[in-house]
Amino acid sequence: MALLTWSGTLSIGIGVFDREHQELLDCINELQAAVDADMSRSVTTPLLQKLANATQAHFLSEESMMTASKYPGLMLHSMKHRYLLEQLNAFLARYGRESSKMNEHSLNFLRDWVVTHIQNEDFSFALWLNEQGKK
Image (cartoon, rainbow, N blue to C red; front, side, top):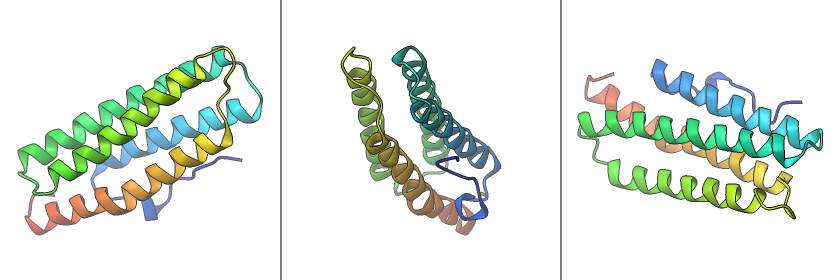
């Protein structure tokens, strides 16, 4: 069973970001399926790297729009992005070692972070864009 399912509660109403968010959920679900199947690091590490790459690309896309629209919450939002990227890099370092395997705790962290971030910070940005008539 998928760890995350896309639903209207995760949509922020900005098509490009909703599609990117769906991609992040898909990456987490792929990683979770590999962990549940007890796949080796040779499978899970590239999936984690795929998630990290998709996350970084999404954050750049989001921050570019925030900069262009002069979003007042850009600095705090960017700090939260950097925090997740640091966590992803730490996971890559930890789970790239021979003695470590990706675990449910890390998957739950990723799930909770992504859902909370979308429903709070990203939704606030979408509301602000809408109020500014820029959506």
